[in-house]
Image 1: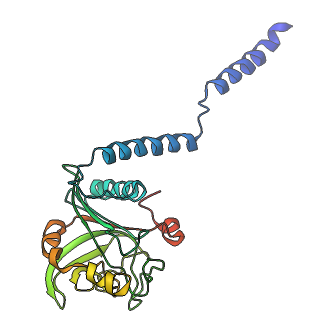
Image 2: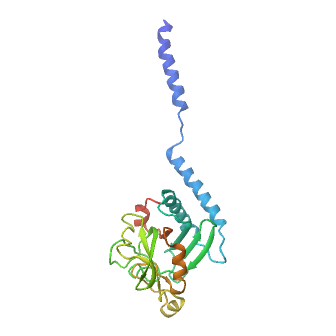
Image 3: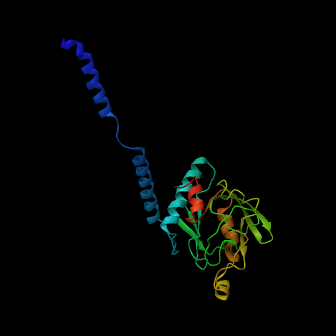
Length: 236
């Protein structure tokens, strides 16, 4: 009568072997490995940056900027191999803007840059996407066209993150030069001057910087604000 139980036994053992053959690696581990691979790539690029005797951005802001840069380049949202990083974790009394040529891994500029008057005093703390808030907006931008405004040569910005900075153009958040972005202003007031939300630059280098970064390059304004890190879809 044993032959009557053979089909049942065969099914039992075949099921057991199939279950054992299934991969056991969880999805979280795969994602972690991918993240680790990117971090290694970012560290390698960072260590090979040509500084031109300029300070380098912090690894934290550089890695986040690089992640978004590659994502936006792949989509065709940005066209140039130019990456601008503004690190608002740093004091406004320090040079916290970097422009990097990603094609040659070369730091082109390291400059002072202002934040919005309602974003903070010496340090940037509060951010907004709302018109007339006079606050800076975080996240990734594509640089737009050049125009002559009340601050002279200026550069329009298009915010690429919905609900975070996508009102930049309607708010007239642009790159422009300002007299209050200067070492002399810091000495006189104890901190850099502030804008109405624009990443304002020193007057003497505004024109050359605008000409380098205009027309669809990537600009990233960084701060590990919880509101930003939980809302952004471009970086992890």
